[in-house]
Length: 369
Image 1: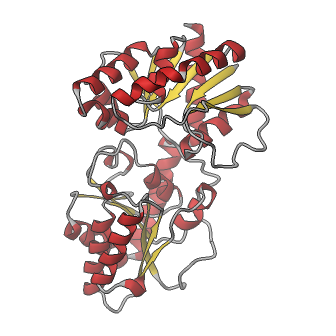
Image 2: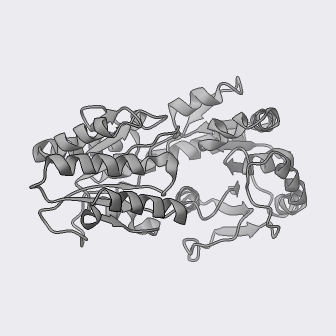
Image 3: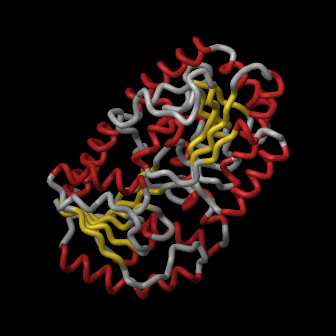
């Protein structure tokens, strides 16, 4: 089979899909609008990257999408030369538009999140672009059930849920060389330093717990990079709350190191304030047998069995988060039990091998149709 992916090759999700699918005798070309910044594909013979050589970006301005017409000849030439069996676009508002304009069938469209939650709400034209892409797609995929409902606002077509699962061999409880002492209780998150991820609420919640449990060796680990102004703002908050000696920021870490940082944690926290389609980092933490505390936003509650694998709390409420974090801080047996239940749940619902088999089945079905 020949598969043409329209996607950002630097995204960990693209890397996971491409590197897994190529193991099943599939030749893959990733057609991209951006430069390649990772080396994950260097040793894979049947994956090729083709860039448009036109730095038009993937910004969400509706009129900016007209620039995609400049890329079409390059894409159509790639299709003519490669002769793919399937064109699969990841992200509906940018690569989805490219796939739609290419007028190739079968065309699969995977929706990731902001392309349906925020893009169509920008203007009437944005909405029409998304609806056009959905009309052109032979198959529409969503990463979560909650996002499937959102997609249903813009199309009557059937939408299949294909989660971003976890490689259980890479994400598992493992002893690692830690940044902390053995008796430290480490609360943390693995997220881009973006305002919408509520890391400021995590810092405030951590401070509340520290004030109440002054004799415990509490630490906060914030894993991820992001805009410098946002990092500066978060560092100032940490300084203002007088907890600099308890908090570590790591900046960006390679995807292959993410599981290492998860295994440094005692408790994982994700307090997003805006809609998220799917909590990948949460199931990564659960796979590493960490109890989780998450906000009741978007697809985050979908990946947590409340009071069994972790706790779901009200968004934008550091006191609610602090209450559950403190409960876990004070009860190691509860942490261990929730962590064990979390890994069992990931094995059952979010096993990456199952997700890959599901995608292969979808590919076979659209080729037959």
